[in-house]
Length: 341
Image (tube, rainbow, N blue to C red; front, top):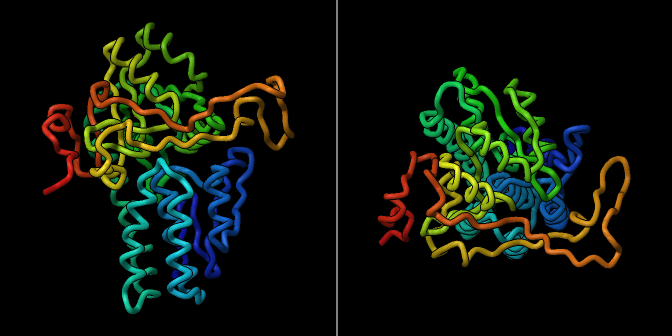
């Protein structure tokens, strides 16, 4: 396969390399990813994360395994193992559905490589289109709040919600970005803050529980988040804490936008209740681990509930900003996301 490089993925020496997002922002470590078990480990540990990026990493690995001689039957098994690695993010399933069609072709090695590279280029184009569509909604002098990480670290391109923000900043329309720290693993505090700093976008980091007071003080003009899955009725699964923001935005009369590629839409999922929600390790709540070592602050026998995502009902969303354009609540109510006949 040709050499390939994005913010978080590389293909070199005929091997996939993953930027370890657990080590950011203090260290930039590229992890070799030679097999399915290694990639599944990266996904579960959130070394590779972001719905688009997870799908792309799985697609590229399958293509590389095919080029390195893995038989067709074993590739089919590998594809299904990867499909089960992250239940909530539907981009993974959508990408693997396309790779499965390529795998069924007679010249499956060439077909898999072509499809994986095409998915990467498509994602870059999708991100640019989302940024253009969303930018039209941002007014000069905006103070925006964002949750989790939705930039180039999570995609092959400029990102989704953060791509919108970056373009608006380039056009001089951003006064300040409020960055939620975001559990699990403080992905807003570690990753979004780092990306905004690299882009020169003015930001302030806040604890998740501070957002309400900022809204009450009229310090937030709009909220921009990404999505891991959009159901056919417009309900959205995103990083835990997104639903809280949507409720707060509704109460305070603040626009709440979801930015995502059309590959995040699951027309066969009727509503948010049907979206599987990943439960994560209790140790992410009872303490913290990092380059400084491990610290536990909760009692050893503390029971923990630690969902990675929550579901925001469509009724709380002001607009779904896709690569195809901005979808309004009236369009969603009219069935635009429903299965096509």
